[in-house]
Image 1 (cartoon, rainbow, N blue to C red):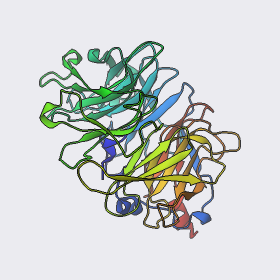
Image 2 (tube, rainbow, N blue to C red):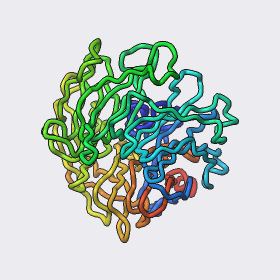
Image 3 (cartoon, rainbow, N blue to C red):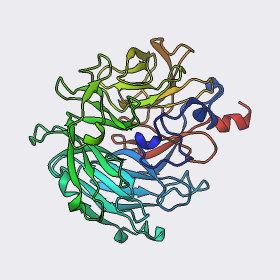
Length: 434
């Protein structure tokens, strides 16, 4: 399975179960043996109550204490934040935080040791009038992490002029230096062209951001997921992309084939099955039908549907069958993101699902369980968030409280929930005998 770093967190730790870990790894982490015996919704804990449009969460252990910390970009305010995991005793209280920088219209931020000094830095992607990627240099001494004066911000010059939406770490040219891969969107108001691109790390002074070279990979209309993953089994990471609001040749879930020794050229693009023209959001990869082959699980924003794209072959160009998943529940609409885990301990992966259009009497975060037939069109909805929250981003799985089950970290940007985590009731239910 693809590692967590390939999806949302560039440097996963053993304590973080990736959205696309094996079913055995998910089950070992703790799950709800009887979901009907567990109260809904799950308990919510606020990491910070802050307006400003928090826009997605990413993980990284900045102080080396064994707990992953949290990086968040606030789109409305432009603030880029680091939240330090406070340890299990204080994890249900607001977390210690520092604003490491401020650049307008931040869409994404993630952790990466850009200059190789052993300390994690933060890379933020920006759209709007900013149209650039920035590096926020972290202090080498962990004691200075919460001091904003210890952080410095520099522009990645080669990134100027594109509305960047998401970025990941990847060794594109297989040298010893990690590169940056980023996906953008076409901004018709500002007449800017979207693309997927990689920024090549220089072999010597990686802190010299002017020496990083830009290479376009492909055109993009609006990148959501950007997942390094070896699709064709040739030993090289390709890129799995969900591209929404694009042209006929690019809109939909597709993969960009790593050309190997010619990575400076455009990469061949291929849709998954007949899904060209669909409106995909944040997807995940995992073996949904337990046949030993990784599948693709893709939420469609405009149809309130999740697609189970079953892969039939292990290598080469994917041969797929598509099964739409629906549910009957007072959930919101416009699915935003999915993450896979075995919530109910039945040996099958379930789907954690967030939605953008919720609030009122409907929920914006829940999980879908299968009846034993993953190809069935109707799955069962289980509430997580209740009616609070109107626009959720993608769900991130992590054992926040260290009790052995995977919790959910997520942002909500309309109702003012801010950055929150939902406590998985699995272990508590087991300990109480439910």
